[in-house]
Length: 73
Image (cartoon, rainbow, N blue to C red):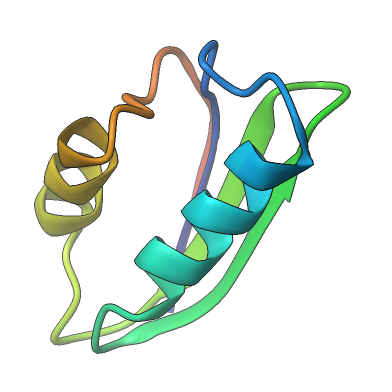
């Protein structure tokens, strides 16, 4: 399983975190999504068929593009 933690500057409220968690969580292969309003950080864990490029594209599509990667594993 792969995991990334990254910053999403567009997070400003609980609705933002809920939208990210629901939209990314609906991708096939995504096991968990945790978005934090206070730190504006999101952690996603996934396995095939999901890919980081697919997750990143979806985040850009819903207007929550990821910025700096905090942790990659």
